[in-house]
Length: 88
Image (cartoon, rainbow, N blue to C red; front, side, top):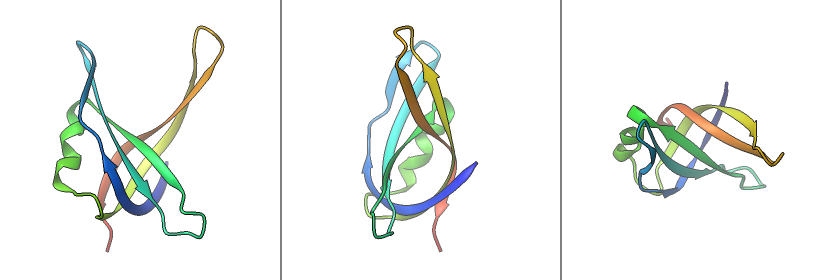
């Protein structure tokens, strides 16, 4: 697990992937000199948890990075958000 603190710059609508999977993404930008941006995924019952925030809010995100290989040998990487809270 890793942690990142940054400003929310985008909150996207929930997507229904299939009968058992829903996904919602949000993007934060940190305040380092490189201004890194990361798009995080919230899955299933966690998709509503970002409703309490707005673009511009500063939050801390606990996440893990996962990669998977597709059938055509391409790799995809995602940052799965496990929890988040307002930064103090």
